[in-house]
Length: 185
Image: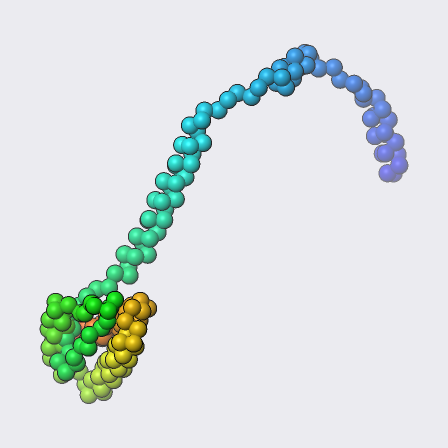
């Protein structure tokens, strides 16, 4: 059955014309396209495209940087500690924590101690242990900074550790405030 079909197709293919004449003479247009130089583009088009690409790249990177940095801004919440003294943190070998920070921290410690009394003994012990760990880390980082005062990584770690200490004290205040303000109990 396939042979019969193939024979019919072969016979039909033989009847097709082997040469097709175009409806018009195409050679003059082809010759003109070959011999004539290509139309010249403006010199400004590539420069505008490059400038647009640069502007787009700068805008995109600036936008991404803004999105990444805006959420990482530390929220400075005043949290003082009465018995904790700040050794000079050698940020760049001459910078120390400012008096504004120390005053704010002192106020925060005072509020923290007032709120700490409202916690149960177990919760109070947990908070005090957490602060003890954080404060020992601050002491160790300060000791390392005394040996390498220009170490940017240690400086950054110290600031993050101070921030973590403030966060712990702030959370204690938030927990006691929310417990004291509940009216649905």
